Image (cartoon, rainbow, N blue to C red):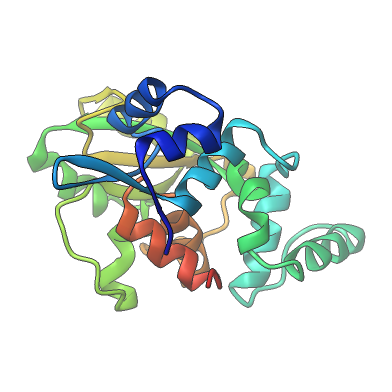
Length: 221
């Protein structure tokens, strides 16, 4: 694991050290403080650089979920040509496809009253993922991070009517990934996402430990 200072990260990203500190404080770039100074993993800098300057055009939500279906051992929906294309993309590996998978859902960040968060997690149609699915998959992640879950776009609209939540960028405790209703991939009785989906979400996490675990699960050395 290679660690960079603020100035090193600035050089990699082509921005000023001040801009790097702003990115760290807002969560755009993930890092941690050691002895009062910021240190950033080099792969996190590369991931941020890729997000700022995407190397590949993202796939549609339907195409992304077709690839993830294969990763979960399922047959994707769609025409024979679409299924063949999904297999070709899946063969590249999920680690190499993170950029293309990012539009599988719309990420929405909220703050809800802490007492409401467990009720949201237990609500029918809410499928926990990332660190919120770690206990069921035995991933050994512990902590009081936000609830991370998938939800149908239509269900999210109903949820916002039922539960007061403030949409915000920081100090949040609910992260919901809204999936277009026509692309919804989970059976009605599922409340926890399959492990490959969890791994992809962990690999995109702003939390260093979670992201490192997700990348490792996807084959990052």
